[in-house]
Amino acid sequence: MRVKAIAFDGHGVIYHRPRRVIDVLLDYLEEKGLTIDREEAESLYLSLQREAFVGQMSSKEMIQRFCDMLALRSFEEELLEVFQKASAAIELEPGLREVLERLRRCGLIIGMITNSVHPVSIKRAWLRQHGMEDLFDVILSSADEAVCKPSVEIFRRFASRLSLAPEEIVFVGHDEKEIKGAKAAGMVTVCFRCKEKIADFCITSLKELLELSRTLATRDQEGNPQI
Picture 1 (cartoon, rainbow, N blue to C red):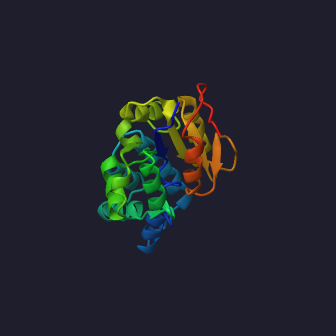
Picture 2 (cartoon, rainbow, N blue to C red):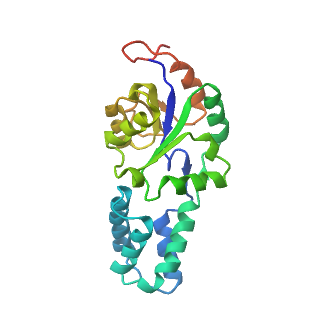
Picture 3 (cartoon, rainbow, N blue to C red):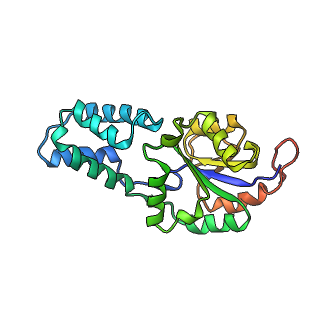
């Protein structure tokens, strides 16, 4: 069965941030003269983030609850602004445009499957700022889908959105649990700078996908690549 689409993880593959959002938030509060238990605040933030990942609250509500639980309500509006700016401060993986353009010229559909507290509209706005939005045909955000990776459900929804079988889709990720979820859903898996070789293929640069796409151009009836 021929591969027809490639789905990328967002953070850690398509882009990264020079600083973690939670670190930016806590540094800002400390600059305001507040004494913060950073370990406690980070634990709370990550707990709320997990809920926002599956749509149980919006990113704005997440920051509101964060402020409420740390008695920071007077800082809510400015902290929300800092949060939004820090979230949008993405840096794209070097060579990304060239890779995506060449993959599209090969006839492949390009998508993203991302665990995020932000809806797809926000993700597209970030990409638009970098002139990259037009290169992504489909983006699924866990915040919209109310389910996040590594659940096989979000991978299957992506396939359904494209009217493709999972076996016709390559997932490129960096998280081992997410790689296992994509594989369980039936997708071809590519590990991007993973520590463990648990995927069908492993790469250290996105440009390696260009050569790999030739390997994946045709596959036998059992779904194995014909090299």
